[in-house]
Amino acid sequence: MKMRASLYAIPAMLCGFALSAVAGTTEEANTQARQTILAIMKEQRIPGLQLAVVKDDRIVLSESYGLANVENKVPATRTMRFPLNSATKAFTGVAMMQLAEAGQVDLDAPVSRYLDDLPPAWRAIRVRQLLAHTSGLPDIVNQQGDVEGGSEAAAWRAARALPVSAPPGESFAYNQTNYALLAQIISKQGKMPYERFIAERQFAVARMPLSTFGDSYDLVANAATIYAYASRGTSAPDDGTRLSRWIYAIPYGLWAGGGIQTTADEVAHWLIALSKGHLVSQASLQRMWTPENLNSGANGEWGAGWPVLRTTPELQVASIGGARAAFIVYPEQRLAVVVLTNLAGAHPQRFIPRIAELYKSAPGQASTTAALCVKMRSGEGSACMTFSAPAIKKAEKYGLRLADPFTVVKQKLAQQGWQLDRAYMSEDAPQASASEEMICGRGWDAVCSTAFKRGKERLYLNMSGTNDGMPLISVESGGP
Image 1 (cartoon, rainbow, N blue to C red):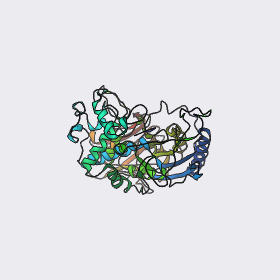
Image 2: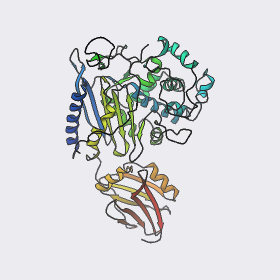
Image 3: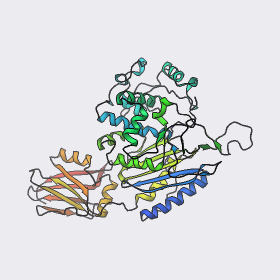
Image 4: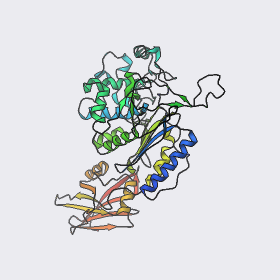
């Protein structure tokens, strides 16, 4: 049973592209995004493509271009299904977090707690090491993207007979065995088949009625045809340069690693649901997007189901599949870009940053004022710092989202005896009250502080001095 082009590969570089001009408004960004996509499609000869952009938890652009089926001249539409291939792994990561939150899975537990009859060398591997590809397991898929022996059963027999490639946690090595085992854990602990768990716990919640599972051999309605310019090994003079059908297979047992067919619009809805906490908590989201540590203490390349492309100066996480589908999330920018194509070799993860740059400076949809309120140590009321739009923009650059309580801020305050009361954006964010005094110097290029007159203490948010892009918070005793 073939699995051509189902493998995921992290690009060597996500830089080296020419940055487009910065857009001034969201509509200007949309116009430039359309122009950029059409130019890329022409340059790379991509037959069909879907694009969706999420900014501030709102879909600001969702469009389709070109042909979903070239030979029959079927246009690509927003409702045409495109395969995610290995980008499916992000959904599997969310599923494992959902089970962890429900107390049905411990990510630190050995795999043998949930699965029986494993080879001895596999039993001590931790669940989180499957998610992050640090298990050291042999791959059920070979270098050509095929399962060995022509059937799933034969492939499992072959994989179980192979030695492990490294001790658990020793190194990062991407493979499909990890996610095939995760599918088995989800089915057993979730008490339903993997595909049903994803459909009920994610597709239904995020409003994804078109999303389903399948490959080139399955009869999936309204599905885009996949193409490639890769050589087929024929004697034709244009072999390797002409457009040909690209047949890919994802056996049922490997759906957790690459089986979803969906639309860019529905992936965008899913990313919004993820951001709003409708699928997992913010704490789970943070863990999912944190690189798994290797035994050496160094960061691995993945978190729980997601490649972590960058942690500084801003976090960037992604999901990439089949060399034709990708979405990249920029949490501090409250931005995500989804590109699905029907060309194996399009590598949208390489040009998505060009699209993202157009929106990073575009005005968000949030209101123009924000408040960060901190409870006084005495418990008598709260002190609030109010920030203007430029200050908010500066804050979000460093990862301080005032739209909801920020975990790191809360932890830093707790360490110093303070308590975060609320943090939010609002048209009528409270101004500093009579019980405190506002001191701000040059916006957040310097220091903003609230002086608590009653306690003669000052709370600082220092945005000029940061640690890994996070705001530094300090309390100073004495009068202002």
